[in-house]
Image (tube, helix red, strand yellow):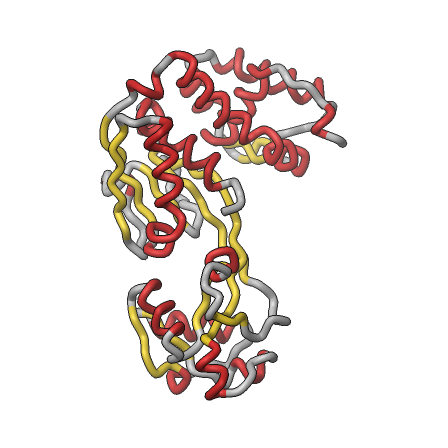
Length: 297
């Protein structure tokens, strides 16, 4: 079906999006301040207009069908844009204020967030942002952060998450390392290379082994618990490391190695606590980030 040719009733689309985000009709109805029957009728009307089934019931929750997933790709940005338009039209983007704590990894904080937060400052100048920079998961339930950008989807039932982008990660080495070691065009050559290790070295080795690379401790001559430090060590010619392709393209001194190996898809889940979604300042930041991160960087 060609979704782009269809015209939607916004109330129906909003009901659909809320049900996706909240995980059930009852939770979505509470989030939109509607009765559950009213919201259910809006979702049903959208299904009838499109001639497809969007949700299947799984226990007490709702699971998207294939048609629902396809529709979601087309209308998710509509929700973020509508919220921004509403805030701007009412002047609320200028009056929403307060602190929002955002938990991100080092590479995200250093290379993705600065231009996005600069745009956020123009959109909502009275919101203050604190970046909680950590390569471990912040506990949103303990209020270590208001919003987190994670590479794994949270499993806690009281958290909501939105997949905002997927990044392709590859293996890279500095040209100076390749001049010394030789070309790394195949997986067999890559398996003999030096690797930059991370703090949890056994887990890293196990993951590389599962990926088809028989790496051992002997391959790892230097390691760090900092992703940015590991990248800089690789740039200094000390071995191979991984990074998202769109970020690595910013460093012309780094060369992708073993290019025929499959790329690793790294998801980005924008996560927040359900209760915090009723906060105007957090909702403003959450929707702004969702829209910004879904665009090519």
